[in-house]
Structures are given as C-alpha cells and as structure tokens.
Amino acid sequence: MSQVSAKNIKPREVVVGLGGNLGDPITTVTRAMENILAAPWLSGGSGSSLYRTSPVGGVEQADFINAVVMGLSDAPAI
Image 1 (tube, one colour):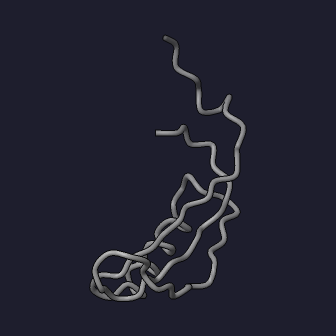
Image 2 (cartoon, rainbow, N blue to C red):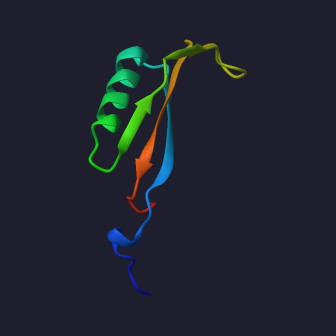
C-alpha cells in the first residue's frame, strides 16, 4: 500500500462539532474552538456562536453548550 503525499491532497471543507455539559462548558467549548481555529492544519476557519441545548432523555443533567468550527484542511483523515 502506498502513502499519498500531503501535497497531492486537495484541501476540503471540514466541520468539527463541539459540545459539553460538565464543569464550565462555556469556557471548555470556547477554548476548544480557539485551539482548532489556531491549528496549522486548518485554513480559512470560522466558528459558530455558542448554543445552549437541553438534554433529551436519560438522567437529569445540565444543559449542553454546543458549537461548530468550519474551515479547509489538506490533512489526511485519521
């Protein structure tokens, strides 16, 4: 099996969904967005607003904080 050179890979749109409800989820999701947007493998990135959503089913728990980061990447899939 041969490896594909990174310079032969066309950049493609990537979408990363983030969310959490433990500890301080606003800070956690915000920091995750900042780190992803600063990553060398992402170009032209942008992040969504933060959204608060209620959990559905299961045990009673805190609301979730959710966000999305989009951009272009030529990094290989893992």
